Image (tube, rainbow over all chains, first blue to last red; front, side, top):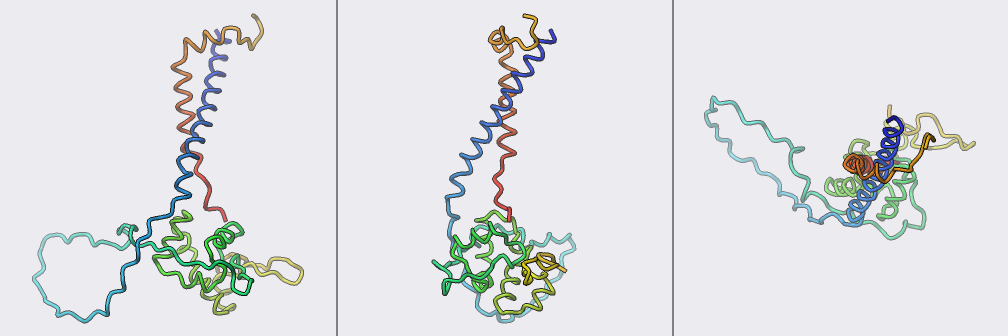
Length: 188
Length: 43
């Protein structure tokens, strides 16, 4: 009886692992088209003209409980994405060291190069819609905003090293011996 | 027949307990599917 149970358990284990492989293969197949597919391009809405102060009409306030205010975060992201335009190659054949931006490592730098971004000023120029597109395309779940890539890129593009170092550390700079300086990729 | 791992009657065992094996297969597929999220967030 014990042998029977052990053998059955072994078969079940084998079946489980085969199932794992099938599940993994299915996931790979399901995800493959998503990687190739480009997000739907929807042009960003045209900027609204300057607001003119409208006459304020004071209406008596209803005594009922006010409706919950809608927050911008609750708005759907569809229609607010725009693919930023990249360039075919780095200007002057020399790309900026994008890894200086805290949050960008070798892998992300390579992806950004593939998308046509080689310079800090390119990243600094991304609009909200473009940040959303890159974030969605790379499935970063808001990392670009959280890690303030735009601000970091802006500081680096403008050469504001002191301010950058103060806020974001040394950004991967190395000393003459090739040692990474302290504070790398750490925010103060 | 006294060997510990004797798969002599394996086919009969599989036939009689296919439902458990199928369940294990489905469970494995579910676990494999849900846990194999491609890592696209690594730096």
